[in-house]
Length: 94
View 1 (cartoon, rainbow, N blue to C red):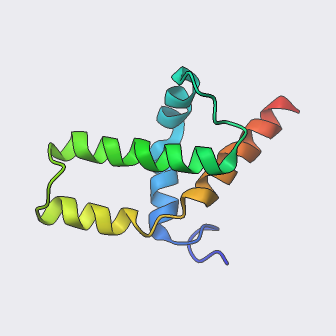
View 2 (cartoon, one colour):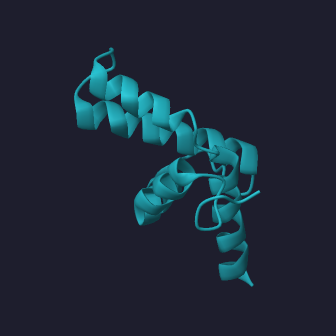
View 3 (cartoon, rainbow, N blue to C red):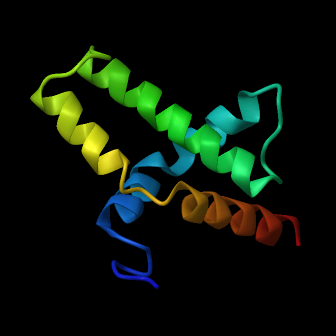
């Protein structure tokens, strides 16, 4: 069920919006291709985003900012975003 602009929730929509082309470039640079496997891709999206948050905040440990970001990221439907990428890739190949 889509609740926010066609996505599961605000957090999922926002992460997809911000990932945009950056993740596509990152994915193409990876030696282990996960583009066709939606589950693997969802895990890569999650890992990539969590690493980016750690770099942006300069912290892996707690603190209000990190805790709030982690809480928001826990609401993201990574599998849904991965499906969006898989469908977009299929459309480009067609």
